[in-house]
Image 1 (cartoon, rainbow, N blue to C red):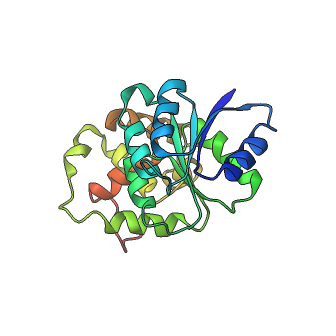
Image 2 (image 1 turned 90 degrees about the horizontal axis):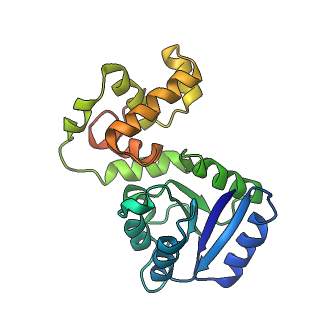
Amino acid sequence: MIRVAIADDQQLIRGGFRSLLESEPDIEVVGEAGTGAEAVALVTALTPDVVLMDIRMPDGDGLWATEQIAANPALSATHIVIVTTFELDEYVGQAIRAGASGFLVKDTEPVELIRAVRVVAGGEALLSPGVTKRLLERLAGSITEKPDTAQLTVLTEREREVLGLVGHGLTNDEIGQRLFLSPLTAKTHVSRIMSKLLARDRVQLVVVAYETGLVSPGRGL
């Protein structure tokens, strides 16, 4: 059973999400929060598998709440999906860097919201189609310091290659095709990279790929 918490300052939105998710046999909504502080307290107390987090909330917004949750080692198994009204919300890139595992807009089709919960609960990253490229560009634009390549010293040459492809947004299947590996082998490489870099999920690997210079704006595959 996937345990979900919903954080949004609009009760109508929370109720809609709850009704939709609880119609699925493998998903349980364990709690709701209307503010950032309530979200942190709720997640700390219940340790859900997935949090659907709005960004604009009172008493600590979703960005602050995401940072608090992601920084707590006891909540490392909790994955956060940012759900917001605007595709290019100015805080989305920061939220991803803070530890969010996914990003959806509120007008997402119901089936996509349900899929997002399952994907993120399984440890994968989730970004809305059509948003990924712009979000990564925003992320890259926020990294102005000199690339920190020290993080790469723990990786093998193959793992660096795989990390670069993850940074370009490729799936395990696509990585496997490009490197002539099976999807399972590609997934194994990604899992080992996450372990070595202490990354929560693939989104965090994308951040590392940009920070280390493996991927840079305007440079294609």
